[in-house]
Image (cartoon, rainbow, N blue to C red; front, side, top):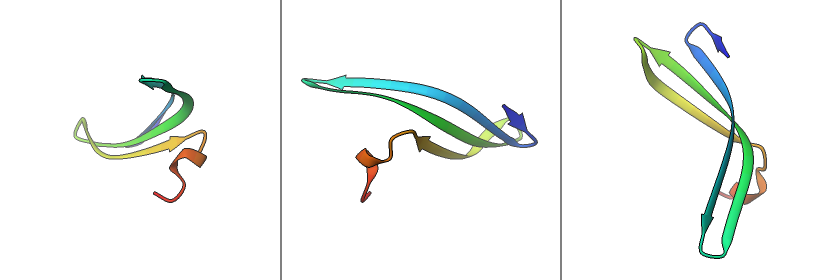
Length: 53
C-alpha cells in the first residue's frame, strides 16, 4: 500500500538455525525520497522475542 512518500508492506518471514526456528507476520513501513528508501520501520506480529532490546 502506498500513500504519498510512505509505503507499507504486509510480510511473513521465517528462519531456522540448528534446532531453532521461527515464523512470524509483520509490517514494514518505508519512507521514500527520489525513488530511494530513506527510512524503514519494521513491526513484528509477536513482540515478546524482542522485549528488552
